[in-house]
Image 1 (cartoon, helix red, strand yellow):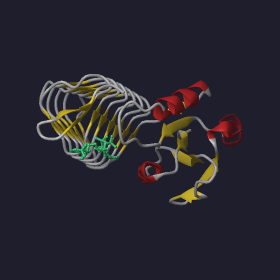
Image 2 (image 1 turned 120 degrees about the vertical axis):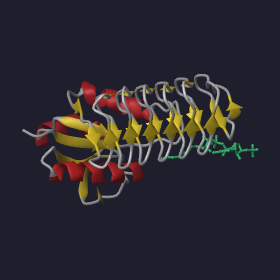
Image 3 (image 1 turned 60 degrees about the vertical axis):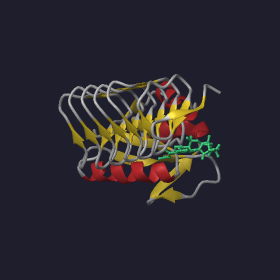
Image 4 (image 1 turned 180 degrees about the horizontal axis):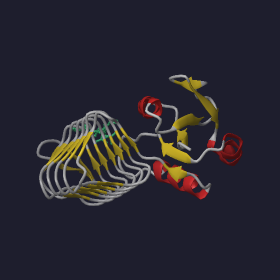
Length: 219
Ligand SMILES: CC(C)(COP(=O)(O)OP(=O)(O)OC[C@H]1O[C@@H](n2cnc3c(N)ncnc32)[C@H](O)[C@@H]1OP(=O)(O)O)[C@@H](O)C(=O)NCCC(=O)NCCS
């Protein structure tokens, strides 16, 4: 039986995830059952119904025979707790994290991609890249050889990681940011949109600009 998938979220990022899963669905790789979102969200996203809030998760799983999930909530900086919390909640409810890789992403066979991770259109993942759980590799990101990406991290569209970069858990790399080789970005850290990172970034810190400078330390 193909995976029967629920997605958490109904915002802009959810639309991109829905679009991706619909492509995979057309290839027989899963069935998208619907979305979970807080009350007040729209009735559907790209024609996929919103089934209720995550408070109703248990009954939605049993009534629809759901087997898998994707966290389709985005983030605009590091250290957020919502995406990890939804991931843990869905796993605790017995769902399996679904991996969604766009057919127009270029992914070396010598990579490891963790459960629940989504890889969007135009992304390039080179040899020996290791990606954790519940990661967003967004549109047109580039990860060169030997990069390691921690769980729940988000690489925003067009970000570029040179070889050997390590991203911490729940870190965020902003749109169009560039990180040079062998740099370490700490857990929960944020790299601003458009930054060029040439030094390691401590956990929880936010760095901005070219070359990147510290905007703020851990809050
Ligand atoms: C870095 C970031 C998190 C800072 O957000 P913030 O905490 O709300 O900070 P503010 O907007 O109050 O800006 C604080 C200062 O940093 C500067 N700044 C903010 N973002 C910057 C950026 N991307 N590059 C350079 N400087 C930046 C501001 O100009 C301001 O400078 P000032 O104090 O001299 O006026 C945010 O601007 C950012 O780049 N987020 C990434 C967004 C992203 O990737 N979105 C994609 C989602 S898919």
